[in-house]
Length: 271
Image (tube, rainbow, N blue to C red; front, side):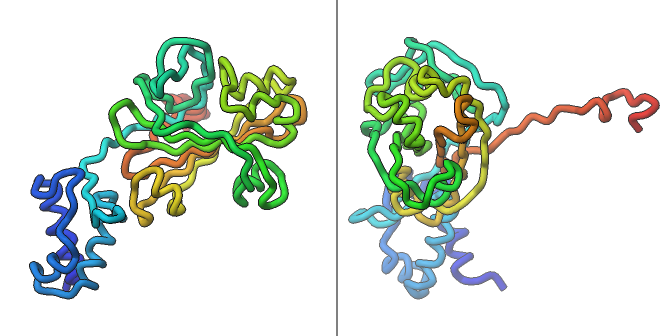
């Protein structure tokens, strides 16, 4: 027998996707829903948690449970090629201008920054300390920004952590205005170029601050895409950039390439 909270979650999901509860609107209070479904508030609460985990709703202080469906699901092509192009950000919108690096999954559309990008010295989390080969909670320059395609809700939280040695060599990398090409150009100009990168991808739950900045429920799963930049000067990591993306807004595409042993048509020696 299907649990009662599952039945209620299914019905609320239907009512959301059919438009009875519009994006940005609040669901009725849990007390009202409990009375409507002739059940207890704890059962309704469990049903709402299911929808939070699916990214359909999120709790908002003083507004209750807010609908955030539909969400745009983007395909992120995890290629391996790093390029440069003529793009910069002015007034929060990406536009033609000074050159900078483009990493796999950069979208061919204008993006905006939500709020002001911040550069500050912070104790680095255990994951970042491990990747930068630093002691836990070492104080490191963090560059933080929240971005999305123009006109859309926050899509990703991007934190770039710069090794103290890199900041010593390139002080401007720690400033709010890093100049054309950004902090990566400043690091490479200071002798760390050419930087080489390795990327790690995993799924996890967001912490409360990440959930708040991305406007998602704390129970919503996120993708963590972490790019580690290795210095050509020290052959050790000089910067780590972590992108946190709500998992319901993206699907990761990885093109597969045939090895010579798998070529077609088959010939003698390859099967």
